[in-house]
Each structure stands twice: as C-alpha cells, then as structure tokens.
Length: 224
Ligand SMILES: [Zn+2]
Image 1 (tube, rainbow, N blue to C red):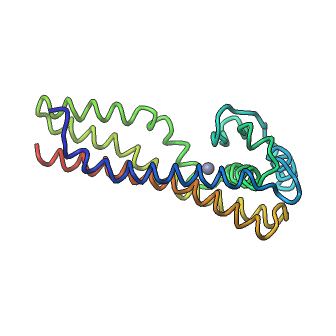
Image 2 (spheres, rainbow, N blue to C red):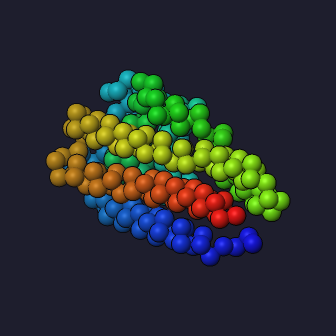
C-alpha cells in the first residue's frame, strides 16, 4: 500500500520539468561563464563595487560547489562559489547582482522575503513529517491524521510559491543595478538576463513539483 503507481503520474511531469530547468541553468552558466565582461570585473569585484554603490555592508564569504551562490539574511552574508568570485565573466556579475538583489530585499523589508524566512523552520520538517502523518493516517484509517499530513505539506507548497516572487524580484533588482551602474554593456546585459531567467526556471519547476505532490496527496486521500 506504500507504493502507488498513480504517484508516478503526478511526479513525472514535475520531475521532467526540473531536469529540463537544471539543464537550462547549467547550459546558460557554462556559456556565459566563458564570456568575459568588457570591464574585466570578477564577481568579487562586482560585489564590492555594487555594495558600495547600494550602501550595503555585508560579509562576503566563499562557498564550495558550482551555482551554490546565495545570500543569508540571518548573518547578512553573501556566499560566492569560486567560479563566480574569481572569474571576470558575464555570468559571475549577473549572479552576484542577483544575490545583492536579495540583500536589497532584506534591507527594504520586502514582504515575500520575510514570509519566506518565517517559513524556513516549518519547511525543514514539513515533507518528512507530513508524509509520516499521511501514511499513518492511511494505515490506521484516521482521516484527521491524513488531513493533518496534507496541511503540514501545505507549508512546503506555500514556501515554494513564495519563493517565486522573491526570486523574480531579485533578478529584476539585479538587472536594474547592473544597468544603473553600467557594469555590463548592452549585449552583455542580454547574457545576464538569460542566465537569471534560466535560474528562475528551477524555482518554477520546484513549485510545480510541490503543487503536483499536493494534488497527489489530495487525490489519494479522497480515494481511501
Ligand atoms: Zn535567488
């Protein structure tokens, strides 16, 4: 009773979308990490320059891996991967500006970012706890437990939906920041836009996956 072929029907479209989005972002990054920006600024230099211009004082740290760059609102830190920090590419500058876009959201009290931050603790537990409640509910035929499991999973869905405006807005701010400070030329801006658009797709795919899982849980609860 724990494996349900119907689950595949719900899971596969989201999974394919996620794989496609991953390929897009890797492709865009691979391409624009090879394109040197005309000013020859590395990600780290762009970060320092833009922070000064935007009046942001943040810690800048390194982080292992590729495309692992992120902004941590709790410690006011941007963490940059080696490739982004060190390479003077279009991709590096675009990614740094995106992370600074999150820092600007934080500075200006952008509501979706606050909401997303508030959901983090709930989301760290949500998928596992909700699945356990849901399965126990089915096993012992306790509809309330099943519903509770679905409700708890709702936090994950909410989180993935709130992430969308947060990510799109950070990229919007990034492109404006790059334009206003003329860090990239017109043609380079097009490259930056492509990198950020591809990155946003991965969040869309994650939201679709969590919505499809919710639909599956609802349909399975209804059948039992
Ligand atoms: Zn982001």
